[in-house]
Length: 215
Image (cartoon, rainbow, N blue to C red):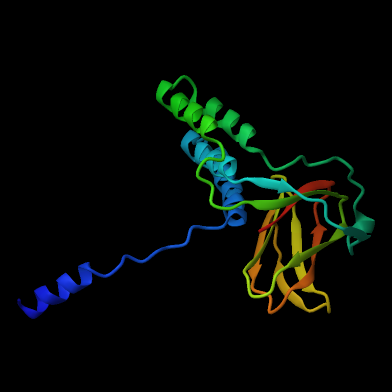
């Protein structure tokens, strides 16, 4: 056998690389971005894909300790209107159906996806719902295991302006996500089991409801 042919044959016998699928937390965050894109483009397939991702991830509702304090901009904020919540899977499916119009093929895809639900989900996420007044900061207590990937995402209503800072029990900053965004994500690997704090600041001019997600 020629050297090149031998090398090719050897290569073909090697196991294919295994790519890890994004975690449930990451997928839920990405689904919100995809949904926003689909709405902007009025794309039923993009919205449907976002709905399928959201529906496939099992979510456990979890109450977490939270302390709220005024932020630097609190004195300049007087809005009380709630900006709403990030869309749920049923709401996404409804938007996809609206964008599909009378297209029977697209409508059948949407119907099949609604029936599919959680089937095939790999892992899930824990979720906490908080409502934060304009100009205020929530400090949410969370716990993670050492030596394992820790993920935390914030999903606010469309158009919200939220900032995120994560610190450990000693006050050391682990992650900062800033900018005019309603979706934030941080991931790190703690050296040991411990308590962490997620500081969520609402820089919007109105009260905002947001989900805090962890793996």
